[in-house]
Each structure stands twice: as structure tokens, then as C-alpha cells.
Length: 385
Image: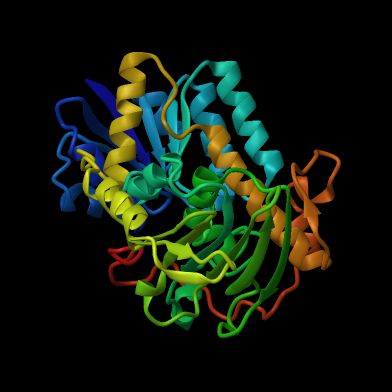
């Protein structure tokens, strides 16, 4: 039975706790840590974690409990120090997205994992979704041919009070805006589905949140060897059902929510109508998808637990988490400096380092409110995207 600790008991911690509870035969939550102990006590009562002890300091929990694994579900600027602290204490770590605000911090986390020999994984729960797995299977089938173009819409709806929470809305504490903290899901999926691009060109804006320094909208163009991808990151869109991924290939188009289309062509190159045979093959592939036994956070937590039991790497590694941060960094560097950024980003690039965004990023507005907590449930995306 693996002993688990949770560091940070804010909104997203519920997804971690529920995930571990799905595997009650394999693990037990024995510690809850939060700088506001009352929040941890409330989570303990909410989920009936009678055997868990509450701490207000991560170091104290790591010292007192014989932990096998911690989930780190705290604000982004704390991820690196907390993960490194856990790894150096000999405890495996699952870190909530984003991995960290800078590549420098990501590499320090990777070095700590290497030195400790412990597992480090970064949350990318959308890979554990049946619709995304189906899209991946379609791409790997070869039925699309070579890739041409992709449109990724990571669009969310957040009103002004969202950025009143004390750690949101500043480059220093949140690490960025919607690109880092919302679109990180779709950027990870973009890398998983399409691979790393060669270059990025982007623009940033704050269209509707005059109480936040950070961007609430960005649009990026990712350049591959021949294909292009457009990524829109937003917290100003009404209707999160607009979240989508559309991939155009040589022979066909597939999209999430699932839709397949293909054209047949005349000798002169013009379309002659649908290629029904190819569409039927793609739809049959989608229908044949075997549902995942566990999805989202529970799916990833189950994989991490299995990886520890089997002595293997998890499906989503720390390197995957770093790759997403590299793409976010390229979007920010391109948008701030108004130029195309080539990948990979080397250590000598100023944007590799922690602190560069704080120094160079525009303050679209100054943060005008700072509350310790926000009442109400959080949502983590539309059900179909």
C-alpha cells in the first residue's frame, strides 16, 4: 500500500484526491498540507480521510510521514521548490500543471529527479481521455497521409473575479496568463499529437481583464517541416464547447469532438464529392476504440501508481512537462519581443531563465484585487473537449 501526501488543498486538489480514492486498494492518503491548515482540514472532512494528518508545512509532512508519493497542487511558482524538496527527501512526485514558470526551473526539477532516482511526472490529464485517444489512434493509423494544418482552440470563460485570487494575475506568482495556465492542456496535446514544432510566432493581448497583469488571449502559429498549426489560448470566449482540435491531412480531416471528412477529386484537382470509403474507415476506427478504464486525473494517477509498482517510467514524464513549458516560453518570447522564436530554446536564451518574464513581460493592467480564497466550485473544461 503506497502512502500518499497532498501538498496544496485548493480547488484542483479534489481531482487528485478523487483520483487516489479510485485506487484505494493500492494507495492511502496519509497527509494533507496547506499553508492555510483550515483548508486541509476541510478537505479531510469532505472526503472522509480520517487517517490523514494535516500539516501547514511541506517539509514537516515529508519529515513526519513515510511517504511514497506526493501530489503537488499549489500555485505554479512553488512547483519547482516543492518538487525538488520532495525528491531530495526520497519521495516520488506528481506535479500539477504547469510544471514550472521557466525552463531553468524545469531543468532543476529534472536534475533532482535524476539525482534521487525517484519518479517525477507532470499532470497532463487530457491524454487520458477517450476522445483524445481516438484522435491519436486516427493520426497513427496513416489514413490521413502527411499533415498539412491544425487548428487548436483552447478557449475558456473566466470573468473578472477569477483574477482576484491572491496568486493569480501576476507574472511573478502565476507565471503567466491563459497560455501557461489554461492552454497548457492543449499545448501538451499538440505536442503529443503533432510533435515539437521548429519555430513559433505569436501575439499576446489582454482583452477583458483589467485587474490582471497577464495576457487573457494569445494566438500562436507553430511551424513544422511543412505543416502549420494555429493555437488560440483564451479566457475570454463564451462557451467552452468551442474547445476543439481540427487536423487536416493529405487525404482527410479529423477533429475533436470527433468528426471525419475526406474529399475525392477530379482530374483537374477540384473536389468531386466526399471520399466515403475513407470516411467510413476513419469512423470505424473511432468506433473500435476501446474505452479507457480510468480517465483524466484518475487515469494519470493510475498510471503513476502502476509505474511505481512496475519500476518503469510513467506515460507522462517530466520531460513531457518541460516540453510544454518550452512551447509556452516560445509563445511568450515571440509575443513580447515581436519576432519568430526557433526551437529548441537554449540555456543562453534570456527566456530560459526564471525571472525574465517578470522583468520583460508587459503589465497589460495592474492587479487590482487580492483575496485569500474564492468561494464556489472550479471547472476544468467542457465535457466534450
